[in-house]
Image (tube, rainbow, N blue to C red):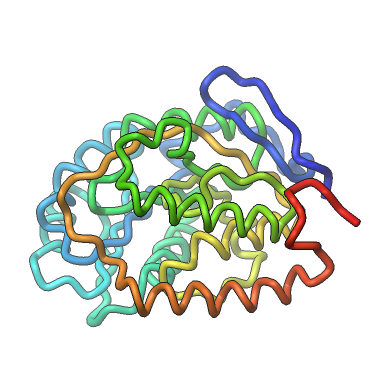
Length: 266
């Protein structure tokens, strides 16, 4: 895998890493027919309806994965035109995303744009992801909230920076925001990597596996939106899961030197 390099594409793409794309150019991509939006949800009745309505102004195909809600999330999403996959009980964010990506692939979509269902991701940022894919041919485009993190709660900002630093050292590349769930991904590439995570560590694992496979990754600036909603993260359990994943991931990248800054090798 080639070293990270900066690219200049205006405000659409800010960081590029990985090998050159092996897929045909998407400069003439018909996004309406080729890209589905996948939204994992757990009790998001307060936000899912306006979110789906706003998203469908940009991309018509929306797949909502209801991960065991009991507040009518599924019915509200379906009423707005989304296709709904319902889990009878909570299986985790990673499992919900996997179900949505699989459905999108089954339906013949080439790309999946993932967004959280709690309104933290702004639909008006969607065109930046599409433009980035067209200009660079990247297989994974990740939202970067750290270009302007002022609206981010202090604790989350610190945790995100710490995790991003750890994963940057793990992969040997500077990754500004490894935990953002706002992502555009080529489904054919996703189908070729083996993901194990079923919960919130899915964001870390997906990014690491794409980089380890030599795939091209980009970051695009996105808005930071935090309201007073209750987080679905269970601090003790999910932190324990992340560290368990982290130790496993160190084994995947055991030839790398994790205690040196990204980009430096021995």
